[in-house]
Image (tube, rainbow, N blue to C red; front, top):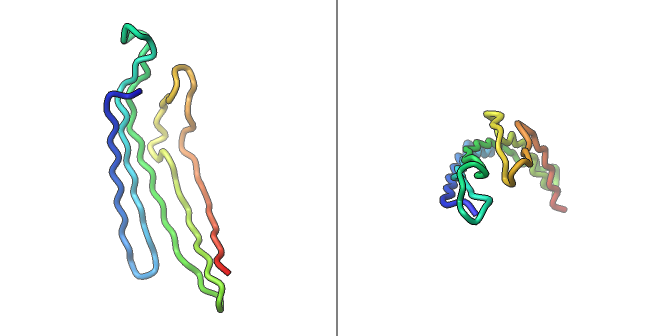
Amino acid sequence: MPYFTAIWSNKIHIKKWTIALDQSYTSQRYTTLDQSNTYAVAPYFLLDIAIDHPLILGSVTTQISLKANNIFNSYYENIQNRAMPGINFQLQIITKL
């Protein structure tokens, strides 16, 4: 369990566009009962950005969103010796009928 975690989210709306910026920091975590720094998981900072826009076609509304996760391509581990993904992208399409 990390000693300290901070999350900060921002959203800006420009006409029908939404831009979101998510930042998170996770402090060092110990993996042994004696809290040895030798086996601790290093702290990390992540930055994600997303942009989305609604499309209205008649009575059907579709929300299209593109998100870039870990845009600094930071190396980090949630569990010791288990690397998490570098920069990655997510495309989401939600349709309301």
